Image 1 (cartoon, rainbow, N blue to C red):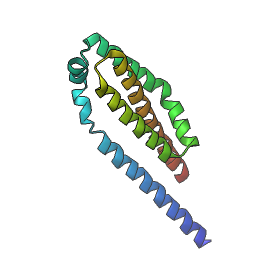
Image 2 (cartoon, helix red, strand yellow):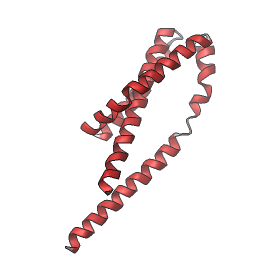
Image 3 (cartoon, rainbow, N blue to C red):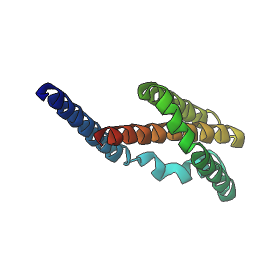
Length: 137
């Protein structure tokens, strides 16, 4: 009986460590310095008007709202590691698209890729946290 309780305690310690690690990663990634130059980038490099910039940002937010829950479900069914890897590839593709040429529809595609990436990252984090918290119960 003591071996079972020791195993349970080890699992609980592992789940708590996972939660603390996730909190540290979230804190580190919350310092997103690239966002501080978002408006000048789109308006100067992208040659967008403020209205066009707001249309892009509205579209980005709509994608985030619509795809947040499904991305967590995808992360539950696939490996968290693979979904995060795919999100990183989408983020890299978004940056490449942003830097290609300042054309509105290319920036639109870049925003789509960036929003998908953010959804997969956020959904995976939430699914991972939920799974670890549920296992602690």
